[in-house]
Amino acid sequence: MTLLIAIVSLLGTVAIFYICKMFYKKYKKEWLTPMLITPLVIIGILLLTGVSYNSYNSGASVLTNLLGPATVAFAVPIYKNVNLLKKHAFEIFISIAVGSAVAIVSSFMMALLVGLNNELVHSLVPRSVTTPIAMDISNMIGGSPTLTAVFVMTTGILGSLLAPIVIKVCRFHRPSSRGLMLGMGAHGTGTSKAFEFGELEGTFASLAMIVAALISIVLSTTIFPVFEHLVINILLP
Image (cartoon, rainbow, N blue to C red):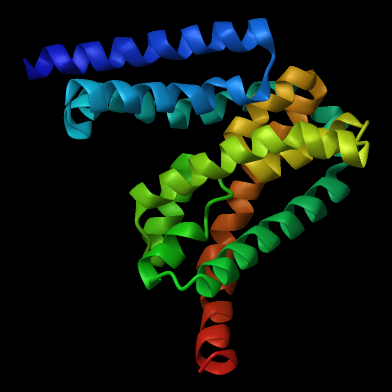
């Protein structure tokens, strides 16, 4: 029975995702994005059927394990446009470095302001990094990788939903601006959204996501502990 549930959960998740994707392509509504609708449908099915999350995840965890290889696959468009990326290397690095620092600091300060406990604070800090790396960072700094995955997913979905509005209001016309914003602000989900705008946007988003992950690892394990100590023990005794 357990094996049957695992097989159904795996195949069912894939089927639900592709059905949601078909509706998204047909109606082109931001709120119909598969990244938002698919989890809601699955949660509804689990509640109606009474199947536990652990039973469901026994099969669906295969998809989670594919996050790493999927992230590596983003290197393909980067390789194809490497000359363009070299041309803007300095601007790209500076913008992503600043974005990574702001993401970590803002997440930390927001968590303190709402009174989250220590584990939740450290789980929220790496929310702007792609899921596999964010979970590793969370584990290194004392957070809960599972909670971090939820925060990352929420950030990615909200980022991809709000990005078209920000792009329109701020009149971002350059592929580099759109791509870097989506990759930095919404990581994997944002990168997927960026490819809907065009290949160049997707390429810049892929690079932003990867570089942001590397920079965040360094910042989270070196500068962040010092900043945390300064804020908690000196500024907020």
